[in-house]
Length: 387
Image 1 (tube, helix red, strand yellow):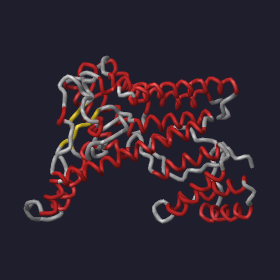
Image 2 (tube, one colour):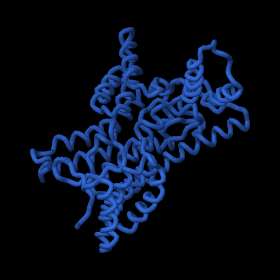
Image 3 (cartoon, rainbow, N blue to C red):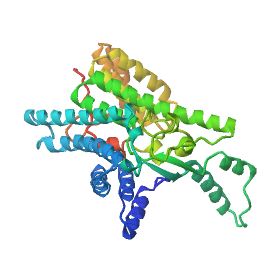
Image 4 (spheres, one colour):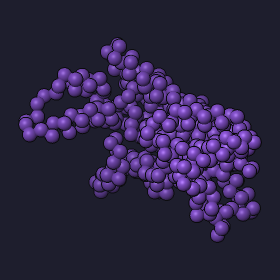
């Protein structure tokens, strides 16, 4: 699982069940299915995990977050009519479901922000701390093996640079074994609020999500620097309390409590490419959508101008990012700046030949790759353009 081979990991946990079924195997399958964007199967495993470990509080927390996500996705599917739209009666029920999703996420956020999860005893969270292989060490070793296998000679010892690289990472790390972190919870609640039209609340949640995400990465860098300077290993075992799973410094936690990570070895596969995998440009785009919904054209324009200036320097992103020209064109039209509208529309059409539409005839703007990601499961947002 630490190498991103989630399907193989699921098979391995299935094989483990043939020896003995455990809640931990079910829990790890949930993580894999979430990474594979299969919320239905993830939820099936979550229900199984709850049955196998009814006292596991972290699983209960994650169950409520996953249920909120799935309820949102299902609501769009079930409330649509034959024309693909939600009628007035269905809309009321749909909004009620979304409000309940917001409420569920809010309750879990409150538990974590108050630090209640830190007071759980072993009997309440038997799966909450696991020892995992170090992802950085695996990558270094893999590079070494690949290089050596390309030679027809007996494998020699490590080069000085390789030995140094291995010495700089820990062999194992501790991981607080909940699936959803605060950055995820704020992001999902922000999406639910966006669907409800609560754009200011959505903007605040998305901003908090990015702040927690940024804090986590910043903490990793600080811990790595401290570890190198002092020669001391940063880890969870320093002030471990046998009776309590949470009574150690906040900087040594991997997940919620500000989504802080104690050192790089504790960042697992899902930390970077899993549940809350938006990068800064994708966060910014969500903020643009909120500004558009609020008709805050100047704020939306400021972010898009910045993104078009910076993102177009990355050749891998140029094609999709140029869809921003259509968004900016629409903003210029709303602002009555028709010359700039025509300029951006011309640039867009030069790159895409025609305006892209879905099967319902709606214009589609997808400046980022969503295939195989959780965001693909969620309904597109209808932008609030009046012209």
